[in-house]
Length: 315
Image 1: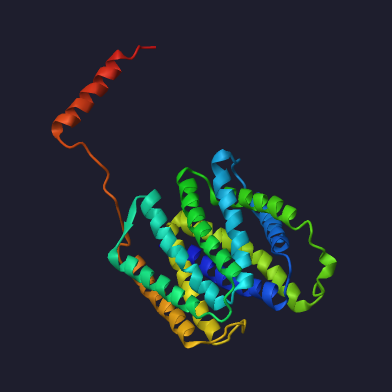
Image 2 (image 1 turned 180 degrees about the vertical axis):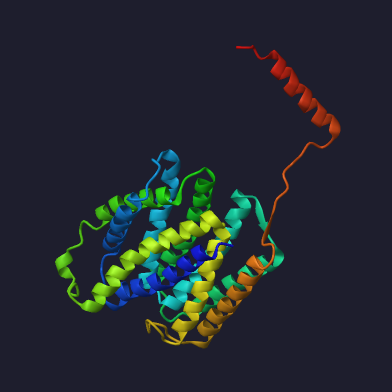
């Protein structure tokens, strides 16, 4: 495992959720696309300095998935309390496992599947008694989960094809910049009154630069490890954050009920067991591919290949 990339991703993902929550909930900043625009603008300038490749059509899917993932993630963070946001985000791990099994032919072990099931059960149990339930926020979170799994798998394919993380991040940031600038055309900056508040300024600038570190760290983890390692790192971060937020640390938006609290802690404890089973043991195995049923079939294939080569004209 490549620990520097994991440490960068975990620390930046922890901090950016806190700062985004402060911006969107505490200060009630009205425009998510405007925040996205500044994050993508600064990210584009940063990654342009490291650009070594030109994009083609193969990167379109990765870029669009990354842009949509950021958009729905910011909206989910703004509408849900952090404890429920981090709990619902763990469902993305289940989606990542399914995606790796389907697309990458990697099959997880029984303990990993069991711990993921407990995590998802705890998240749904907590959601069943969430006093701050918001159907739109839950929809944003579930879309964020689906897009997270999709972007991770698409990024892994891109890395395997030889694309560098700086190239993917630059063109994703440029795509986000154009899309978010169009979405925030109706936002009147004069309508927001806290531009000159020092606390807001610190949170806004921190969110912009943490966006660079988060995107770079996530791509670095996938490049050096795999998509499941990224899910494990995010799971550990969200588990710690969920426990702290339940005790009204950082952003006091959590409303206590026993069912909700027990569900959140069950999901958090399962997260730590998942981390152990996913990385302390062999977390997946390759699904065996079909082979010729007998030696005769194999010999026929070899003879057919030899005959084809003999019939090819010599240039």
